[in-house]
Image (cartoon, rainbow, N blue to C red; front, side):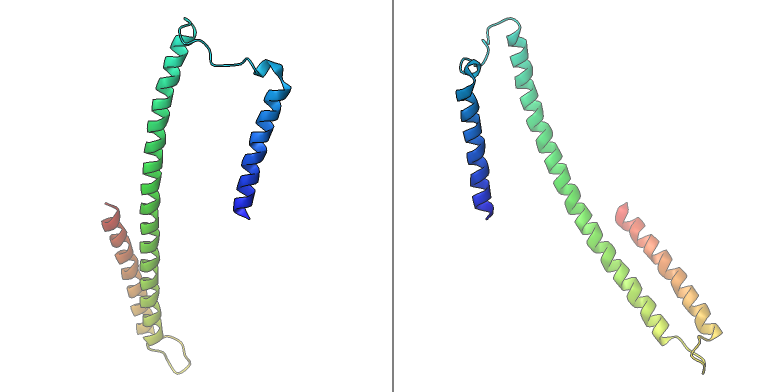
Length: 133
């Protein structure tokens, strides 16, 4: 379906351009201006320079956007891995924390979980400070 759509689009464009050229007699004699004309020569030089700068700007933009995307994908993957490990540690600590007969955490276990939480946050911050700088 996409090949058919592409061929149809290109064909319709070519037919429309041919039809407009055939229908408008003014377009028949329209051609590139004389390069030796005193007003046209500086414009052609400007056009040539513009084309070089456009090519360079396109290359630089494409190159850096590609590298930025690669960096973002790596950072995103790393962030998800770190998030998963921190979540795993939190679940392990919560699952094995000491509980009373009513199922609630004991005071010592609650203090321990708060300490582990604080230390995991510190480890998280230190991890990203090492990765980013």
